[in-house]
Length: 261
Ligand code: IPD
Ligand code: CA
Ligand code: CA
Ligand code: CA
Image 1 (cartoon, protein in one colour):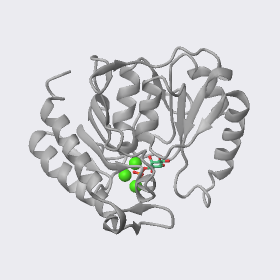
Image 2 (cartoon, protein in one colour):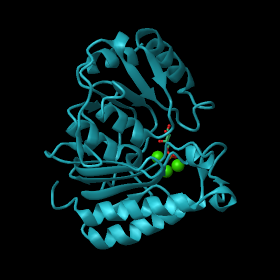
Image 3 (cartoon, protein in one colour):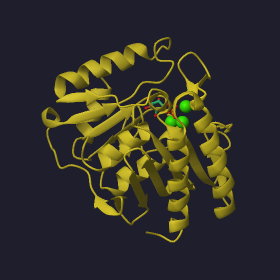
Image 4 (spheres, helix red, strand yellow):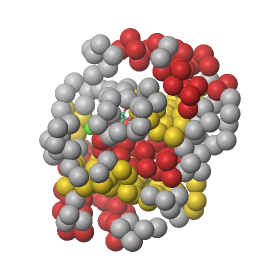
């Protein structure tokens, strides 16, 4: 691993995982940001903890964290840490243990390193540019499946999908993916979904409407595991464009074609 993703950073993420596990039952203090979009006491506590400690460790980076960020496509920081204190807040609220802390470092739009940690399964995914991808320190790589008919695909839905214009597109793409693949999974954490591509469980993952903190770390981990990441039209991966498609690389073009159906 590179020096900039050292044991101190990993240790902070482990400590943040411990904070998440301490919240149970009524302590979670579940609130609504909108009809389906939740935030809990744990999201806020983990974010505060990470912002405080990561800003001290990485003073030259702008911290962009979900619960406090104001982002604009016109003012993209040159060096940024994208922080999702809990990716999978709905899962967390319902005790569905597919939840992660996600932190990704970017410089001039390029991924430097990323960490995704599920504190319930104690799985820590990490990658730094040019160094490969790891799960709990063991090297991981994408699958070598070369047929859509043998593939398992992850996806997710934006919170406002039911009322948005995108609803029809989401439903028709799902129909196309369902017909051509072995199946679709909607697990509820985009960061972990991307890691499932990186470790070869999913052949692909796609979703519209994600924010930079959902995908920053996972995208680096997929790329370092030998996979491909792009938008839905095969343009280069960019944290600020709408729509992400990650795959084992072999099936990328086939999946791009499904996204256009
Ligand atoms: C959400 C999760 C979910 C995805 C949503 C995201 P959050 O993030 O990644 O899987 O489908 O679009 O907003 O709100 O739990 O951090
Ligand atoms: Ca998220
Ligand atoms: Ca979150
Ligand atoms: Ca959220």
